[in-house]
Image (tube, rainbow, N blue to C red; front, side, top):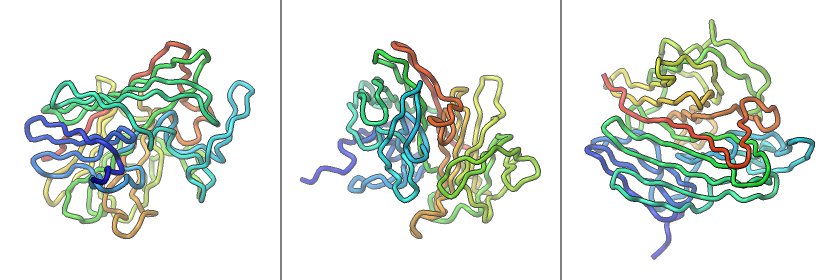
Length: 308
């Protein structure tokens, strides 16, 4: 029997909720409610493409040229996005994680990131996926188990579906509580920050996506009393939608309409990526977390229904 490209599979269940998490990359492969898909995942016999559902760590997004400096030390990461000359989405997307399931609605994935080319630091990482009546909550904790201070960033890469009928995102309504976005160049690297006010990227009050093209980092998030910020994507024809709720550790959101993907998936789902830091953060230092030996960093986000 052929081994699935994403390794062992763990299915979670809670009421009408179902999720599947994979051994390779601790990837969220599927999320459903009442049989309705809430994310664009991938099949058991497929390899994850375009970052679908993957954990992005110890940095999210891109590092230009893979070259960065840490406390006077020049470092070179492997270029995993060679066409753009970038190191992309961290180092743990394709490694096997240990999956521990003590409850039918929860799984914990564990891995040790060991020192390697371009990232000479050691982290113990735990990602817990837990279903409840409120949806799927994902908790990520990284602990520095090395002898030196470790720069760190984290993100995740779900593609949201307001409906799962195979239509395009153009008719969906999108609400993003962000006051600022980053302009990026053709490599996806930041060139400057811009207020959203008066622009097509002011999504604070919600509007139809139309033909808007997004591969854009947003920040300065408006938050509720509990420190959370919420992105909503909704199909006005059906009244159905999905909400992604991030805690205060996630200061950035990358939104991606998939226009650079293949024609079968282009603009068929909306990637909403929680990030603790922006693109190219290892080079700029913006919002990079510095973990001293023994220190930990924990961040949580949740996917839930946003139906009328």
